[in-house]
Every structure is written in C-alpha cells, then in structure tokens.
Length: 193
Image (tube, rainbow, N blue to C red; front, side, top):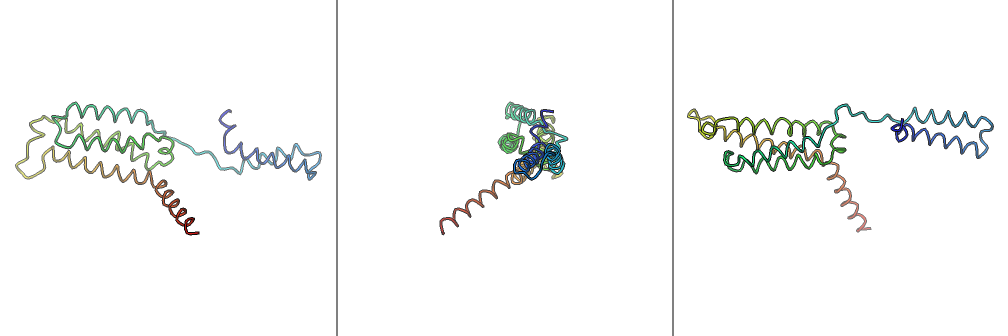
C-alpha cells in the first residue's frame, strides 16, 4: 500500500483528481463534483504507464565482494601467475566494479546487467581458477605440438575479457557521453550567439 502512494499511477490519478477539483471550484461541475474527482482520478490512474518490473535484480554487493576476493586470491598467488596477468585481472575488475557501483543504473539496462554479471560471476573467475587449478609445472610448460601453453591461454583470455569489459562499459556510459557532447555543442552555439 505504501509503495502505491509513490507510484506513477497514484501520482497521475492525483493530477486527475486536482483537475476535477479545479473544475468544481471554477463552477464547471456542480453537486456531482465528488464523482467527477473520483472519475478523473481513476481515468488518469488507468492511463498512467505501469511501473517497471525488475524480475531479476542484480546483487551488486555480492558481485563486488566476489571480485575483491578474486583479486585477493590472484594477488596472493602472484608468483604463480604469468607476468602481467595480475594487472590484467585488476583492470577488468576495476571496469566491472565501476559499473557495479551504480546498481540502479545497471538494473535499468538488462543487456548490460547480464554482460557485467556474466563477466564478474563466470568468465573472469573461470579463466583464473582453471589456470590456478593446473599444476605449476604444467601451466608453465610449452607444448611441443606448437599449441599455446596454459600461461599463454590465460593471457589471451584476460585480453579478451578486458576488451569485452570495455565494450560493455561503452554501452553503459553511452548516455553520459551523448549528454556531454550535447552540452559541448550547446556551449559552442551559445558562445557564437
């Protein structure tokens, strides 16, 4: 019930009710004003757009905590990780964490939310854990058949994940970039006038 008071439907209904009250005060409707006020409230409330439904809210707090834990585990095993891989993990986590720090905005874009969640919950941990679960001597060994070693595979995966994280961030911040360019255009036009 309390949730309805702040809903779009209630606010639109109140506007309709106020219009009915103004019609009564200006003498347009007579003794039937309560019916007119209630009727306009109902019509406006029915015509208002419905509230957005969030079927699968993202738990950004847990995802951010999982990312911090992943970085801590990788840092603790830094000697075991290929050179530059720890920095790659940190860069991917930094991009994801920045988007996760804005949960309302993230939940407003289901495609970006899905991509961020998949990167943070599945792709990045899977790449790192798979590598760390291999024996150290096997992970460092180059294969004789010319195939990439486990270390090279991890570095390639981290590069792909970083590229994808930046691509998702571009979609996430597209509105801000557009707003900034609009504001620059406005300032230039105002300066020329």
